[in-house]
Length: 505
View (cartoon, rainbow, N blue to C red):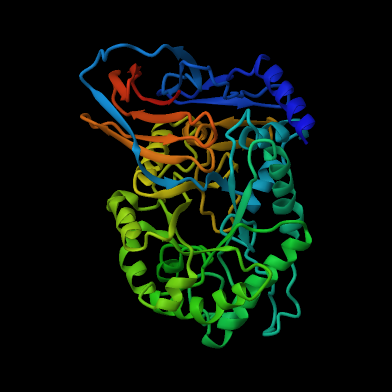
């Protein structure tokens, strides 16, 4: 194994010296993407400079992971101070990543093989985003070409007709294998799963969208989860985590969306968890799987969480809480700190985000720096409020923002143009990478305080080097000078206008 690691590192360093620069394409109005195809793709290798300061910057003006190396200073040159306190520590990181949906698989596999390989490497290798966690849907979602579950047809309470779908074997499982193989030299890739849809015969409205589970099928639904885990284990995959179901409150919004869903209020969810799902999982060979509750917007988080966790049995079964980013502008991220304070033994994980989801939005906005900036800002907000990781939605969509059988088009960090045999890395892709590439699993957040209003977050990386990572977002239309004080170390920085900067030393 060590020989393989040495060989792998040799080729990575050699590759890093090749032409891996961004092929910028300008869409006007300061909107730029990096174009990848079968012959070329941009990559960045995290090459740590000993005893110096590595500064990696991406900007609206077109810089993508531009690295400079600085010396430590003897005095601060700016009155804008950032004070690092390594003695005040917070949460440990579970990972950063995205979702391997049917739509992602369709788009990736529509590319020429070498271009598709570049796309997967862009996410899962040390030259790419170094994703460490992936969400894999259990059955169909709105980002499928049709609605489906694993047991469609007539009522089948014993689940005798349960079987994985063509999409599992054609898209999800192949992507999982590729991602796992590509990431194995950087991290042990973790997978977690969520459900969107139950068989229609289990639901009180007989449809994929809206409605709730019939009471007599609570245990059947728990067994359905177990069946899925068993079938994927046969394919060589164990899941690190599982959520209690994607966005349970969607069932109340069928007038505005047809997203497949299974409705739970906090009371029925508590009953299902404590009497059915959790006992079924804990008594199985998957007893160590992390059970995450809620998996919905933080605007609903506080009240739903309070009611759900009133029951002690439910509370003891739940390992963590999953939260989405939609509607975040309507509520402070401090509700997440409140959740941590009430339940400090439960971890928080942000499990879904995407842009362009409002009907009045431009769904795919090629080169939008604003969307990348919003991603970076949200990641910082989450991390500063005890969240242990951040997971994007579809890792690749087409030029329309699909396919989606309900026409629920949105944007993605990577957009595929299969006709041209190429794909486009958006600012959102680099925004996530400024965290995922530099803050590995096991990193610990530390205190960073400042006298200016600048989104930032700091971590110490695991391992003997104990490197410090500071990520800063400058949303201003002008540059900002700052001085970082970490004990006796002083770093003077000039943060370019409209930029994301990762500092590592």
